[in-house]
Length: 168
Image 1 (cartoon, rainbow, N blue to C red):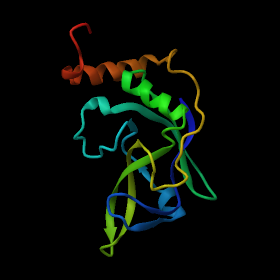
Image 2 (image 1 turned 45 degrees about the horizontal axis):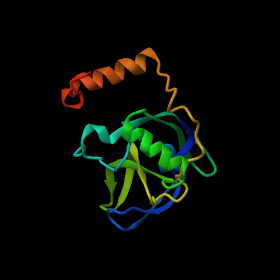
Image 3 (image 1 turned 135 degrees about the vertical axis):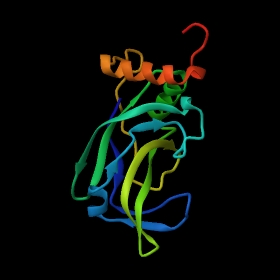
Image 4 (image 1 turned 45 degrees about the vertical axis):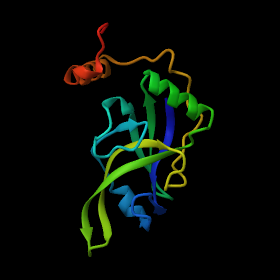
């Protein structure tokens, strides 16, 4: 688990999609809605990559002010890809986390409003310069899940039988 990872912060950020700097005010960041809490190896906001791209979950999202920023705990699942990503983060070969979000409305045809958080992904260089991982904890080998978390993971596997191999 990587605790207190900055998921989004007020500031001016230029994303790789539109290449235009956008300012996110404290009020916009504070009002951000959370729809999905998935953590991915690569950006995939439209769900086009295999389900195995989802390597974890973001938990305990909390808002702090001055500057306005959302922080959360990133729990990485002990899958092969999850373990690889966690190792790269610990070695500081991956340092940034990049939020995925949609805008609920467009005001005046240009300024986005109503940020809807759709999860986050690992990136080499994120638009949000303060959205980075910290040291984390060594819990990958001894990952412990609640009954509810195990039920959720089992439900996901059952709804995607293509992810299960012959031995499962």
